[in-house]
Image (cartoon, rainbow, N blue to C red; front, side, top):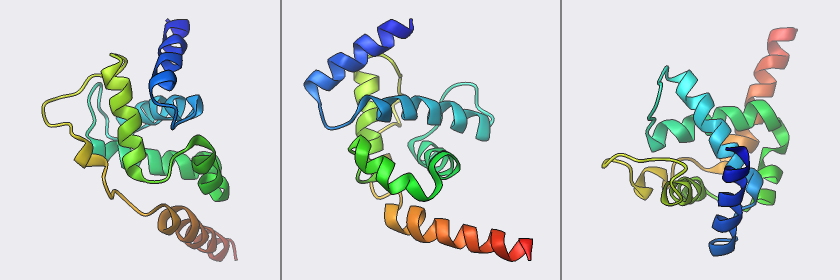
Length: 130
């Protein structure tokens, strides 16, 4: 099964080389994280996935998040949608009739969330420690 996943990723990359394999792996991890966060067994919405991805990125990469996203080829939340729909088109993920690319457009500003947001979170933590 795992080999099939990576073979599929290779095929996706051949047709759409914008995103690194790590980005697809992250989206799969973010999906699981989001399902747990919202206590869902299966489907989550695009908006929910964006929220889960944001939390997971901050948790895993902290102040390096913007560099990691850039390395993966991800510039906006719409890129997350492109990855999801590449996975849907490759039959790795499924979608409902309500799932659309628009659900991923303008979800949040990366610099605002991952740069300023991280600094604010860090300041709150430092203040609590004093």
